[in-house]
Image (cartoon, rainbow, N blue to C red; front, side, top):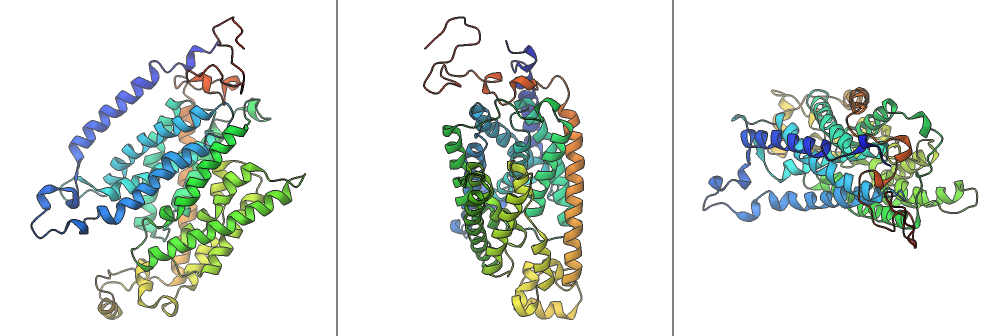
Length: 457
């Protein structure tokens, strides 16, 4: 019989109702429409097609597919944990996006003390959600939905504070989120698992296995992520040539990492066969690796090389067997080199748009000259390429430190006994939290219900 401590009958409804009541209050008090969604701001001269909806919605829709379909299917790779992988992803993502709109909006309050909600807010919230879902991969099968909601509740603010501090005070380039999304999520997830470590699972678990159907479903998730990753990496870049480069570099990086993953998978397998886990996870490494430099003039050849490097790092890493680690182990030092080598000779005046913090400061005569060439160019900090590279390194260490600290604290919170954590024997099993069909766990055969003595064939 299942232990009563895993029952969701009171815990999940109580937590969800409490969270939704608090958020309803916060939305009512602090959230309003942005100008492009506010009917009062529209006039006879307003051109509907100039609305930011038509600029941002297709990116939002693409990332939606990645979040709910791509991640959902990818996390359903365990034989007895398909319901949980997809449904807990659905539950956690929905809450994380709602919560991130508020938390991220706190750092963007307008003069009226309101969060002005537009599609761009939803898009930013989905990036915060992606952080939670990547970290979810590190604890998959070993936590309850109540614990996942608590993890999202704590991780979103830690991520948002890190994002705000790094972008506002350290000021870096990270268009595709290699540092602030993937690196943060990796170390946060690893820190949580460090605290939640279960010694009895160290040598594996009988239910920590895949099957033919679950592997196919997970591979579908990989394909959805692969197809839409260019939108993920380019969504928040500067419109125009920067965004164009981001799409090109992401596709090239993904393509090269995919081919390299196939080669490595066959080469490293003792019998010279392909391992599906490599295809499911490591093929995506190129999208992560190019992230920090995705909008820069790194050349298509460099994007190709970054894809190969990212895949190689994942395949040769001892931690590459987990989804989270494979997302966090891709090299990012190429981005620092790209910043060091970025010059006006390569970029022209647009150097100071792509690297906004290298623009001349207020009062510098060069700023006036540049503003004639680039109307609307804002004053920067006048950093050199070397100085900006140092700040990129500082951002790496800051992100890892805050993620690890936040993950450790979160791990201790998740160990609280009333959060319905499954026992070791019931890890990786849908039956702990779901009513399962009669053929659960037995393809082609009917399963005997737990509370029944009858044998069904």
